[in-house]
Structure formats: structure tokens, C-alpha cells
Length: 457
Ligand code: ARG
Image: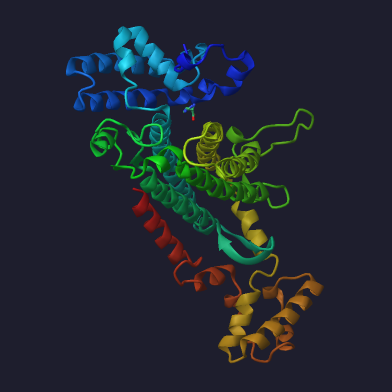
């Protein structure tokens, strides 16, 4: 039975009912709705709407329903209730009879749905934080195992300067650490209870909302009822956290897809996260990574969609706001899946060091070193840059690496170049020199690994 029959003499059109009902997606808020209802029943005792015995009876029935729902959430979908709030109330009435009809005193579905959704968001944030940290740990472990795997670093997707696979891993650790802190920040604003704001103007029962918030595990209660029932900032914030997080994962995926190409050949992905072609027997495709990259799109879409839904909504609650759930559920599920999947990709990943090293040695990635060498010998940097440019052109003409040029050849470009240039041009020296904080020098990378481990334990 609908929650609002009295005012109506005609039944809703079946097509409208289908259009309007939200149970098929908001059934996911069942646990939160029940937990919120238990707290509300306790609040009703404080204002003498319920006796302690009645409250006990309601709480027992609600807890039994909670156990039911936990065991089999899908059962909810069998019902033709309008939404999860109607479903819980009707189940409660089934269990305790008329007493169940008292529960909604002083409460509206508007403060109820806002409360349920915030409780749900808080749980998701906890899962996302955990997954974000797990992926960071997986990246740190991969970094630790690949501290001496030298590979080319790129700008413009052109080989630029040598880096290590470890340093590359740690770059993503930093992005994920920011994702983690963004979630924590979102949590602060999210952790404020809407319950007791009624439909829009506040509840007519003098309930201690701070105490009620505490019962539900919220840090505090909201300050303005009009704002409370129409605020979905936390949905926008979580969607933007997810959007940024997914951009990071998409870039991670893209890098790995490139590393995995026949052309680069820097890594081999495990069979656990790749799939074959129905036609081409030789294929081993990086599907997990491509899906991570691809799913980034729908998450950005959910954010844009919700921004548009909220834009221009008058105060306070409007049914438009029911559109907050599907996009949010999908986006956070997707983000969580992709975090897990990214960690799985790292598990069993093989870094092909000889090939990485070979690529790092090609492409004149040590040109900056030669310029710095000239600077150390007193040549102004701009001039040194020009000289090295000419050396590179000559080396390309000969099809050789810089370090393969003879001293006589070097001297044609600058008389200050001596035998001591050769050790400077080695890959190891390129790495060792970048020993300022955040650089690729093995010492800095080891430090960064230690710091990350400390933070993640
Ligand atoms: N299903 C609704 C939603 O998700 C619940 C709140 C309905 N409130 C109302 N006044 N119709 O927003």
C-alpha cells in the first residue's frame, strides 16, 4: 500500500507508478533505512510519542527485518512498494501491526532519504579508502621490487630522461594518496545528520537532534532544515572524488597498455587479467586495463548528470533529487571495482628489465647529462644546450648513441669535452644525479618507498 492514499480517489496509472517508483534501485538503502528507523524510534520515546515498551517492540522487529535484509537483499525487489521507505514501513506493520504506523510521526521521507543516503555514503567512503590504500600498497610493493629497473621516462610520449619502474609506480602512489585525502575531506562535510528536519521546515517534536545524530554515528546534526532536505553536495563531492580518482586510474591503465605493446615490450601482464581474441590466436589483450580506462567515462558522466539535475532546483526537496542515486551507486561501484582491478593487474605483473634498459639507452635520454657536463666545465647552459643539439644530430646521422662517439668526434663540437664525459653519460649516472627530494635517484626512491610504507601501515 502507498504511504499517501487518503488524498487520492483514483489509482495511479501503472506507467506513472513504474516511472515514479525508486525501489528497484533504492533497495540498496535498506540497511540504512532500518538503522535510521531504530534511532528515530528512540527519539520518539524522548518526546513521549512512543513508550519504552513500544519502542522495544519496534526495535526488535526492525532488527529482525535487518537480519532478513542482510541475508537476502534481493527479496526486496519482489515487492511493488514505491520506495525503500515504504517497503520498510509496510514490513514493519506486517510484523507488529498498528504500532508500526506510529513510527513515521514527526519524520518525512525527505529527511529520511537524506539520512539513509548519507549513511550509505559513509560506508562507501570507508570501502573506498581501504581500496585506495590497498592499491597504494600494491604499487609500493611493485616499486620495491623494481628499484633498479631502468626505463625511459617520457614527455610528449618521446623518450626524455631515464627513470626507474619504481619511480613510475610511486608517481601513482602520490595520485592515490591525494584521492585518499580528498575522500577524507569529503567525509568531514558528509558526517552531519539530516534526521529530524522533517519535510523541510523542521520536525514539530522537540527532539534532541545532536543526540540523535550521535546514535547514528554522525559527528553532528545539520543547522538548517530547508538546506538539509535539498542538499546533495556530498553526492557531488563523492562523484567528483570518483571522477578524479578514475582519471588517475585511467592514466595508470593507459601507461600500462602502452608498456604492454609489442612496440614497447616493457611489461608482460599476467594471464589472470588478459583475454584472447576469437580469431587471432596470438593475441593476449589488456582487457582489464582497457575497461578501467573506458569506465572512466561513465563516472564523469554521472558527475555531469548530477550537476545538471541540481542546477536550478528551487528549495527545498523536489522529486528531481531521486535522480541522485543511480549515478552515484554506479559511479562508486565502478570506482571501487577499478581500484580492486588495478591491484589485481599489479599482482603477477612482469617487468622486462633488459627491454626497459635497452629502450632507456636509446632515444638520447642522456642528452641533458652532456649539457650539464658542459655547464660544469664553464659553458653557459643555453650554449651547452645548442652544442648538445648538434652532437645529437651527428649521433643520429651515425646511428649511434651519444656515448658511442669518440673523444675526437666530441671535440669537434666542444674542446672542453674530455675522457671523463663517458661515466657521466651512463644511465646509472643519469639516475644518481637526480638526488634532490622527489628525484629518481635510487636514494630518493628508497626514501619515498619508506615514507609511503610508514604512511600506509
Ligand atoms: N524516493 C524518494 C527519493 O529518493 C524518497 C523521498 C520522497 N519524498 C517525497 N516527498 N516524495 O528522493
